[in-house]
Amino acid sequence: MNEFDSNHCNLSDPFNGVRCDISTGAVTKLRLKACLSGTLKPNSSLFRLHHLRYLDLWQNNFISSSLPSEFGNLNRLEVLYLSNNSFPSFLFISFLNELTGSFPLVRILTKLSFLDLSNNHFSGSLNPKSTSLFELHHLSYLDLGDNNFNTSLPSEFGNLTKLEGLDLSYNEFFGQVPPTISNLTMLSFLYFKDNHFSGAIPSSLFTMTFLSNLILIGNDLTGSIEFDNSTTPSKLEYLYLGHNYFEGNIIEPISKLINLKELDLSFLNTSYPVDLHFSSLKYLSVLDFSGNRISPASLDTNSDIPTNLEGLYLQGCGINEFPNILKNLDKLETIALSNNRIKGKIPEWLWNLPSLNTVMLSNNLFNGFEGPVDDVLVNSPMKNLGIAVNCFEGEIPFLPLSINVFKASHNRFTGEYLFNLQS
Image 1 (cartoon, helix red, strand yellow):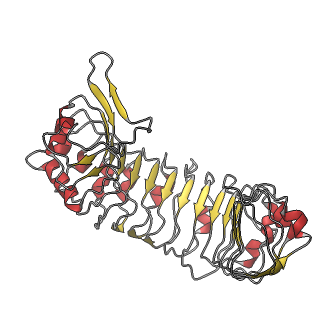
Image 2: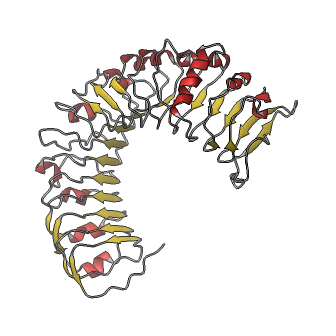
Image 3: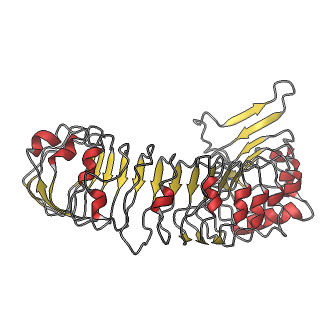
């Protein structure tokens, strides 16, 4: 492939290189991540590798040009990475047209099981009448994330029944999530983050047999969250629904998803305070409820919250007293309470939490520390502490030797402090 400039090839990457068939010597795998600069031309030696099954051209610098139809020569391809190449928008349209035009590329690449076109500048329509994308019946993974698609989602996505992973994040997709998505019974993760999907979430998504990751954060979804009771518990482990516009009681149905490990319900724009009644979620380790009004009763020591939490994010929740609920969370590593109205002193018991790593308390009304803080804080395992924009006065207390990041600007601290922050 001498037609490309490869002077900047990342030779230190142990995965870059070529793999050949032991018996025939034919090239079956080619991985050239961050290696090439130039134009993909029809006469490239790449298109003479007819036995190629795996092609990874991730993060190269291909000069803008149409995608050669000679990709169709690689009809044994099963895995194709073209991610992070900054291909222009017209290229995807050309790519799709070639799939169905005089050189039906997709119909030739019928063995494709993995297709990654993420992080480019593709745009246009996914009209099933003008593309054969939905005829790739062997696809198990499809990534069109981080492009410029501005279209509704065709119901024909439900034809890709072997899909195990589908990522359409960071686009401008709009309209409802088609119910035919539930036809993808092998799906284990679905990433639709940061689009403009609207309407209700299809109830079937919460009870799919293998779906463990459902990421819908940053859309315009509305309605309630409903799903049928099933004799088989939901397999969902990671559920991200933040930055949407749900209505009604969403806590009760979510509390039935007993296998959840991470739950993001931040900035739901509810008109009522919500309770943190999730004690049924025994495996929950991360909970983000930032940007919502929380019932004060949810924050006392008797609150119904999972005790295995490792990360709790309650930023911008209008909290005005330090939540005593934290006393019960011995495994807590990260607590984020910034942008509230918490007044008074930081309780002494906080620094005794055995796993504490990161404490974010900036933008509150704290005015001091409870107890002999110099003796307690210095022995904490904490690495990151943020107390900026508060009402602290006097000398800065002795910090733990483990501290890496300390933010304390916009207070009234006095005196000098010799910092010895670890790298």
